[in-house]
Length: 376
Image (cartoon, rainbow, N blue to C red; front, side, top):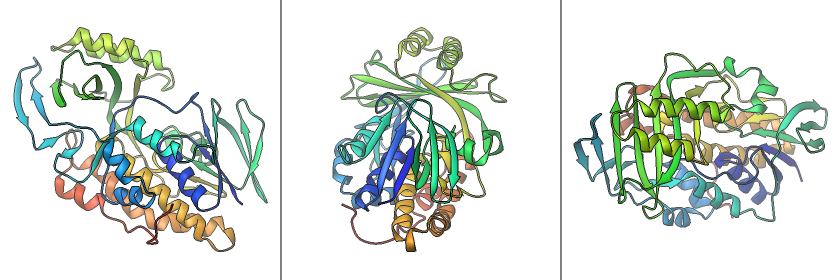
């Protein structure tokens, strides 16, 4: 039984662990957070990614957990409504679509629960070294003892440690898109009832949506910056101060939004960027999801890329003759790359706004999953 070490316990890592375990592998997931991460924005499962969820037997449960947004309002900088619709929401697209909008934390927990007691999760640790040898990879950790494994998968996001160790500095692959995104939760101080509000104020703006039967809010605040901020992306408190300062300059609800950002235990902020690479594997190490081909939230397809990528990679590893990782990685890349390129293009098609509906429909369905049987 091959041991596959997965760095990152988010959507990509949890999906891959589930798919590999069902195919007879021994996945081990290493996650630097102390537990399954809470918080985060609503994400979308679209197109072929719905088929992935169906093949693993989780589609119905995911549908039951979807958000219940009834519509949205567009506000001017002073908070006056200038447009409203019950047909469309900027966070998810058409409200009559078969696609699923779900909170990121709910999807991760759903995937994680399927392997409880079957997949080893190591929380509160991270990879610090990778040394490939003839029979596998020697992996060093910040806290735990070193391990020898057959394959290492970097599913550890835009700032992937596996990518840095195996391929080199992030700057070689990161393409900044001119803005930052912050996401955090708050009590529903606006009394929104399954209704989103969106506002633009100069070079900043936000979308606010109620979740958990409208008991909570998820606030997604974005602001433009001509160049990446000069600071450490891991310094949450520095980023929090940057966001609070930007929120305080808004014309509408600056104080309550700033207070919410200050108090949020799940505060997040990062640059909007894409990861573009000529190859996603190096020896016995391979990248998955945002680590290898982040499309940015502008695309609306990060979650679908993670789910589909996990399925294609797991299938390629399972079908490789003689457990040949080189053949598996080559197949994974050849199947996934056209899909990735179409979906990354969504983020740059219409700067400052969503891609066209036609482009989204084409991109989200632009791959045929290998095999036909359920993976249960």
